[in-house]
Length: 170
Image (cartoon, rainbow, N blue to C red; front, side, top):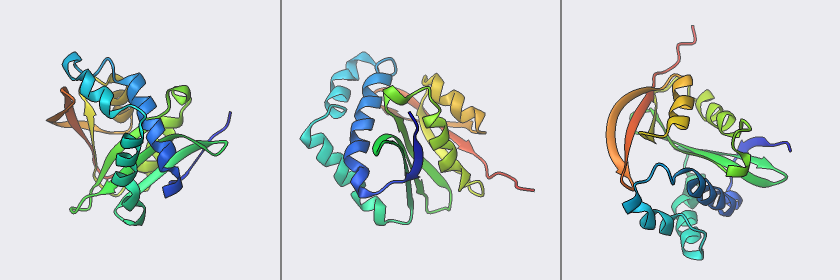
């Protein structure tokens, strides 16, 4: 099956929510400490309440020039997405990169990630990742990101901040 990248719109939010839940359910069980799994599972389960919270959280980003959101689509179905926000200092913060498990290992995440970076070569780009998420760190490192600092946890899992300096175009 083929897929393509395009800017997200509010109509994508419900599908983005479902991709987020599926990605979290399939990829985080090894990353989240056992004592946090109930709370994690409660948040990343398909329900009307969780969907409403997700939609309310992101609906205003579509009218905010500080946000850039792209989706990967196949047959009008969202199979992945990425979110990037501009910080007050002019840097960019990658806020999320999620691919449905059925579409992982097909290059969707890499292309979404590269799309979010390409337009921001002239900026410092920051992201936060779970410290033992080796797959993600390998992707980020391959694109010039380096460890910067330890930071707060995500459902008990230690996280790190990684930075990519502006790309010299000369």
